[in-house]
Image 1 (cartoon, each protein chain N blue to C red):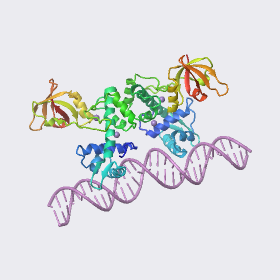
Image 2: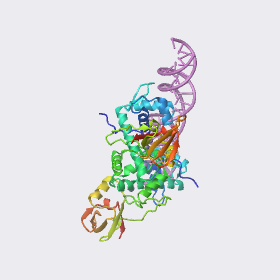
Image 3: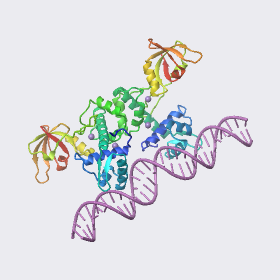
Image 4: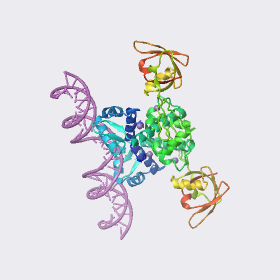
Length: 225
Length: 225
DNA sequence: ATATATTTTTAGGGTAATCTAAATTTTTTA
DNA sequence: TAAAAAATTTAGATTACCCTAAAAATATAT
Ligand SMILES: [Mn+2]
Ligand SMILES: [Mn+2]
Ligand SMILES: [Mn+2]
Ligand SMILES: [Mn+2]
């Protein structure tokens, strides 16, 4: 029973969160280059950090073989993700930020220590289950259940679906969705799909219609009604 | 017109805040040793940092002569103090922390960047003027007006005063005040002062009475009714 | 099965913030 | 006002995180 409350640096926490995200549901090995890309550092720097994380028992690491989180590393990563998403809810629900504005601030707030702070924040927010982008918030015990949504590209013509989340969190994409009135919880009906470029003609909330590119469809998480 | 929005490190911000606090209203020179004590580092480390702060134009520094904040340094310090005190209000008013629990958490939160975050937080809290310890909150333009309170030791027998703040922020002291029902805004009447040790017999809110030591009196900020 | 390309690691350094020990400057005391 | 004491700075290291360039390992393509 290894404890999760030793002090990890901002940098270490960011690595763990990124490894968690890149290794996905199946816990695949993550490559040095993928980490260098995501951390905006060089591969040599990643190697240094991996050696350190391995020494601290946070990752499984064999040279040239990529890395996976240990159970301990997974726990730490999920705690950081919980904090990130709770702070995002706070920023949007309480302070009135747009969903396109909160990521970078939450990226800092997620590293504030104090278990009790997180629990009080969670209670203050009413124990939200999802963040402003539709991502699930891990519970206080560290359980994170990823709902299995569809991607809009998997939806057939004349099907109606509920908009549940986004894959791309880039401000420009979120602002585009705002301008198109595509918000979490809206109803999307696929009216037509262009065979050539897979762009789609969709109707939002049984009201206005618009064309969206494949690029947009690929980043929308939805659920059948 | 030097701008205040270049990036300063956590450490630099902590130094500026401490220099501000130690140099007091009169802007007295602060000594290397005083800073070493307050930052819990060694004098040699302080000297290194002072050279750096001076190069960045944040302090006036001549070797062996102590330091003062420049106008720029003062502005940065006050921004950090504003953030610290606003976050403390949030933690107490919104999350339900005790006034004895919030200092260390605010010590971290005060370094989160983003002007707009501070302004939205301020609005969310209803533009509070004072933090949970009675300390004034600088406004968004950087104006900080220290009210001139009395210290309880300056109050004469049978005078009634309003409890306005504390000088010592140590959790143990604040918890003692909680147990004694001495809270911000309560009425304190000095009934008797012991000539020998200057301990006092006081009445709180015209109700219960208790003895308090000189040490306690020295840390209570009050105002005549 | 080689040769080539790609990925990853190692080697050698840099900066920020800290330290101890020694040197220097200022202040205090006699 | 000179000696002693105290405060401060300098010298020389250490740790965390990051870099470039070169070497080594792995993957791919002929
Ligand atoms: Mn982060
Ligand atoms: Mn999110
Ligand atoms: Mn701080
Ligand atoms: Mn305070």
